[in-house]
Length: 225
Image (cartoon, rainbow, N blue to C red):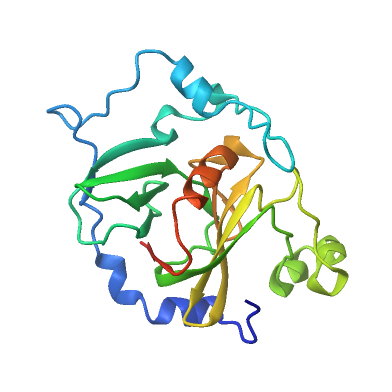
C-alpha cells in the first residue's frame, strides 16, 4: 500500500482531543496483592528473552539488559479495560505499549517516545507491516537536519540493516487510507527505552518488536494516549 495523501500532526491530533482524558486504568499489574509485578527469580529468563536473534536477515545482537530498567521488560499483565483483544494501546505517560489479549490479560512492552513537541495521540489503525524496512525521513525532519537528505524518499531512503532507525520491524499507522507518518518500530538503541528521545514514533527493542509484529494483524486498531 502506498499512500497518496498524508496528514499533518495537527490534523491527526484534532480528532482525538477527547481521548486525552481516557484512563488506562484497565492495564494493571496485579500479580501480587499490592499490585507489584513479580519478576522471574532467574535473571537468565530475561537474558534469554533479549538474547541474540540469529535467524534473521540481519542477525540481531543481544540486549545489554543492565541498561534497560526492569519495568520495561516484556511481560504478561492483567487487563480489564474496554479495548478488544488484538488492540494495541500505547500509554505515553508510562512508556508502555500493551497488546490486549483475551482472558483479561495484555502483553506489556517498554517503549521509547517522542521528545517534547513531537508527541501525538489518537485512534488509528495499523495499515501495513514490514520486516526490515527502509527508512525515509519526512521533509519536516530533513528541514531540521539537512544531512538526512541523503536518505530522503527522493534518494531511495536508508537501506534496512542493524543501524537503520526503524530496526527489524515497522508497523505503519494510518487514519483511514491516510498515512500519519507515525510508526511503531524497532530500534538498535535499546538504552533509550523508557525515554522521550525519538521524533514522534514509538520505538521498541528489536526483540520486542519482532514478538509484537508476529501477533498483530494488518488493520489492527491502535490507541495512543
